[in-house]
Length: 224
Image (cartoon, rainbow, N blue to C red):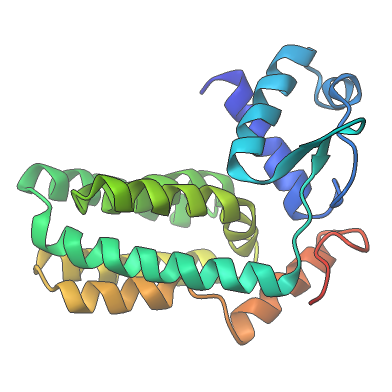
């Protein structure tokens, strides 16, 4: 993994837990000292985070953490759920045998990460899992839109994996999705992925609680 991607992941986590609060100025030199790297990978990571919508560049302030409220976060998860459902419905109809094999390989990697109780490794394998479904839709425009929103909410999806029992539940949901895709059941795949992505009720309460438990500063996730 390129260093800038490693740095990006670290900054994503810091933003998600509120260690880097919305509106906070992001000083490349200070972040470099904190993470033990030069300014170059920090600058590259900030460019990536800007493209994801997690960082904004403002006149006279430079790079700052983008602001987001709980209501907006719910809306993004709702849109993501519908895009995932659409991609899953198409993937169940269009994925090739080779794509099925790759999906099973990544699913097995998710199983190993679950068994190892490794949330970071599960996060990365989970990213691969969903990306394969987008690609399996064989709809380039849909895949691009899904990836864009997926990146935007990635830190919050990642944080969910820190909630007790969530990795196991996520894997079980993946297992059902894989079975539906292999069976070519588009409607079932869509339903499963929609429910897998939606964050509502207890799951959203757990997400907000985890932000607090992980030491999010006041304003790290502003209430709607």
